[in-house]
Figure 1 (cartoon, one colour):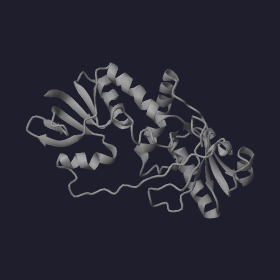
Figure 2: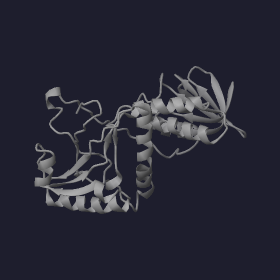
Figure 3: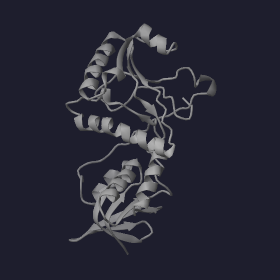
Figure 4: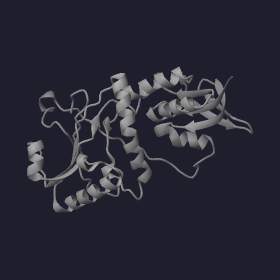
Length: 271
């Protein structure tokens, strides 16, 4: 039985990044447990790969998230340059198709400034100004955020893994957590092959399986989860250069955590 001070369950970008920070700050025996054969095999590499600026985050209710996004921007950029991870500054247009959605853009502009985005990096454009940037985009108006970047979060996660591994983190792959038993001193993590490890402290970064892990620890037992699937389509090559900017639209139903269709200019040239 292996003994660790800290065990992180989940080798996505969150779990891997946390492993790096802990191992860089403290002298601890730490492991990351991942059920796949490598880090970032799921959502961390299957996403739009956009580094966003927080103009659309309400500074009253999402203040910490907005600040984190702003502070981390330069850190990601520095790591990208150090490791040759793609860092393509495409910018983004958040478009409104009517006056009602334009009102939302005006609110976003105010939020963006309050969240600390430099005023020169955020513009509110009318339809003619949008057409000068992207002739194929027809809209009422748009916010043009110049800071948005297309990157590769899977590549980032693998680079952070290397840094964390060099600091002593042990990455344990192809181990699916089946059960966690708690006693007075530590937690015993049991895998599906009946092997196990012990840890004084467990950090849950299991993504879509986070609730399952929490309930193994006796937490959040009153909750259930409902998974939604997002569809990502790759445009045929003849259409990939219709625009050079990433395009989002103001969500039709603002109260729900869903995005309307959007067009992403990926770092590999695909759209």
